[in-house]
Image (cartoon, rainbow, N blue to C red; front, side):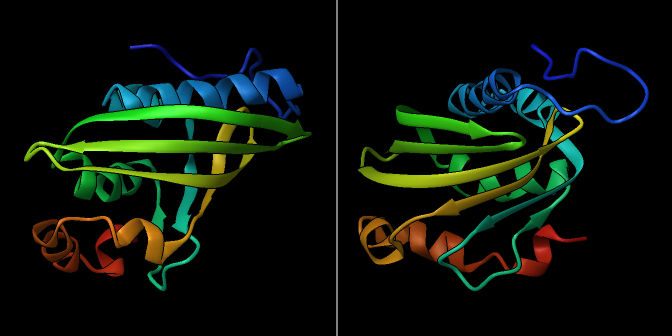
Length: 158
């Protein structure tokens, strides 16, 4: 397992833009590889993850982030990331990317996302995905929509 960790110990220190981009890239690579231990190592203990176009309450903490991601990841065989642009300004990293999901049942969905990451102490403390809910969810197989409907926002905020 690769670790996402700052090069310092002790007091808070702002990381460089390149280090912050590297942390975000490592997190997304881990997600594509279903390597949740590495993904969690890139997340701050107080991380907040949200899908901005939805009305749910998001996920708080690394374990709940993985639990939330698993709603989809438990049903797909592959997730392919295509990065179009990545930019950093201090502790904010913006990622413009496309995700392609291949479900275990054979269906494929593909959608473009704009994701904002805020970092603290070299780890992601806020992760906000912006996307077109109708376009993306409209591609989902009916059985997957039923699976998603079983989950509630409170399941990821304990």
